[in-house]
Length: 458
Image 1 (cartoon, helix red, strand yellow):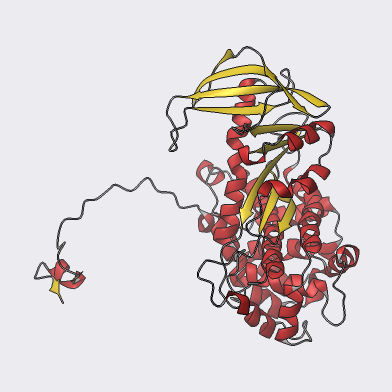
Image 2 (cartoon, one colour):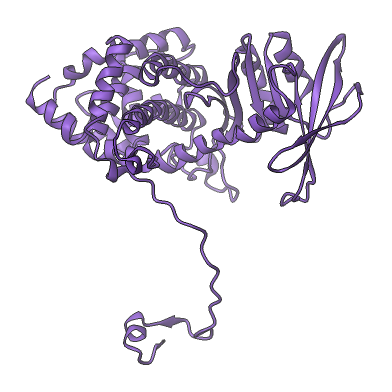
């Protein structure tokens, strides 16, 4: 690869891993083919879809602070005006954005599996998929229709399906209506259910149509019961021991919708401590067989659904997934979709680092928690340097490198990581402090406090 590449691989291995995986997940030829297959209204004239993805990836990863700055830095790859770029972004179709997220996961999954070896399943013999919704934050009022709007303009929302064992976001269902009910977006999720899939979700997705639809496709569910869900019949509630949260009970129930019926289990957790809303018990519905998933296992799997909340938090904290300047729904949802694709890349980087970390002889280093922010920052700060020092064609081979070879490359680079630079900072809870000094004074002088003299300031 040349001496310049080797220096980067040794001094900035995380940036090299990220750039190589970006090339694999977002290869130009594959993205343009994806666009041709999914786009219905848009067409290609001068601006390729792959170029738009690369531009937005640079923005969501923080390499450039805005679409304008990214356009200025990438003029050679974007032979059109800034207005044309925004017009293309604003008209991005949801089908294309949704396909981009699934495409990135499909491209990266073989590499991740080769890196970690056998992925430990949450439930043997099943594929766990965690489902949740995400509403995009309000945008700036740049559109004429929003100028006189006092309320925050919502550009849209989405449902996301996460594979918690791999950390990959495998499906996104977008909606341009920020006020639409999340349940109205479930049909595409239902259409993608495969045999032995187990969908874990909160009560907002607990509908007869979804539960019976998952079962009809030979899938399974672990979903908190909604108070308004009708139950045809219920058996005796029997105690099944305890969890960390409280006592555990179980009963058989029957669900019915028209001519369709389903026998399921209702798991009830009697909480030792009520929730902030005053809830004293939580009911979870599942159609998993008892011999594969006891009541305690079902309760534990539901509790672990917060993995997807952590995904949303990581994407929001470490990536610019919700750009306030993109007021058009198509552009805003496209930015979020690219951020999910980028998060899939960082999931593989994180996995490779953890495998290499476990091989460290020092137990403190081997078990040290890694900072997602530090990983993203390491890639972000060196990105421009990589682009300047190395030609683009240097990365082409990573598009088609066999997964096992790619995994060996990643693990080799990961062995060059300076682990202390990626230590996750942890701290205990803050001690409440009652502030009683200078209550009637608007300001104080820190310098005078340090010197022990008068502190009053006007």
